[in-house]
Length: 112
Figure 1 (cartoon, rainbow, N blue to C red):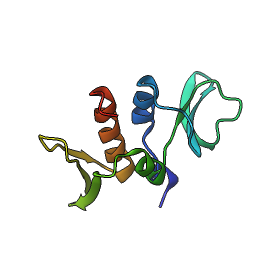
Figure 2: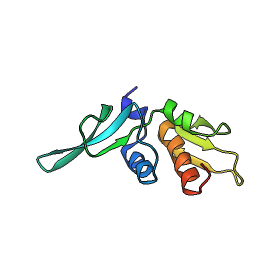
Figure 3: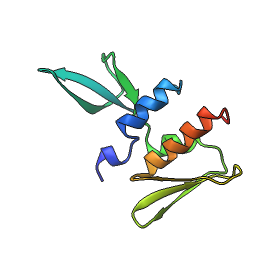
């Protein structure tokens, strides 16, 4: 499995950083300028890069989520369910992204 499928997407990583999530993770998305083209890449740690975003792994995201969260796979999409009423359903292409969407919801609603 590709590493990119085991960590949160760059888009969601940027959202997490903007919401104030700590930037402590094993992997980071970094931005690199090459002849006017920016291309993101994954780096263990963040080195000397000024613009970086934590690329949390599924395991790291699991540690951040409350105990009452769980995820399951259905027809190729990951689904997230949580116990807050009303129950919400999140869909994403990877488990890392669905876990991130739930964390973002919890943070935006001051539930964590």
